[in-house]
Length: 168
Image (cartoon, rainbow, N blue to C red; front, side, top):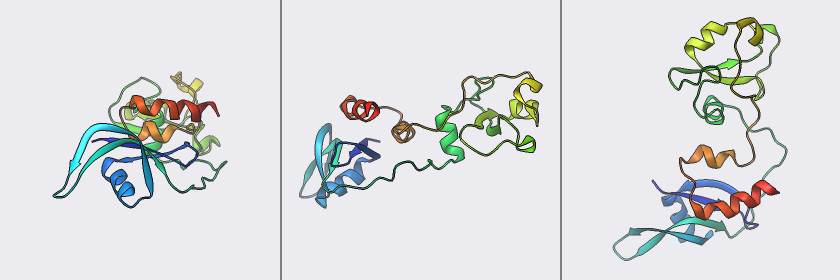
């Protein structure tokens, strides 16, 4: 499935959508094409080139400073669907680094992806108590994390907009 990068009027990345949704936005004149892919959609009366990048015609206000919503799927995506203790990608669950029973909170900085065996081995112990270590420190997702959660591959035509957004 072709994924399309959606930009605000300021060329700031907003989201990633399906090619079908992008074509609907184009047909409703709510967006314009920045770059095209080599694929096309055909109807009885029309042939449309499928875009890779579109820009909305009207500015969309994006709230800043809000904590990104934490979900199981978002934590798994942040941790690249790998156990943060052993690296396995099977039987994944969530684990609180500092257990809730010991005062740990349910936040981006305290929740990691864990396989069920590692989670059971750690139990309600701290990392030192369980003699376990994290592959990397948990953190909130970055401003462009939605791009990497939405697609397996990032098209070359997206790179200028993603690098522009990450540098600002």
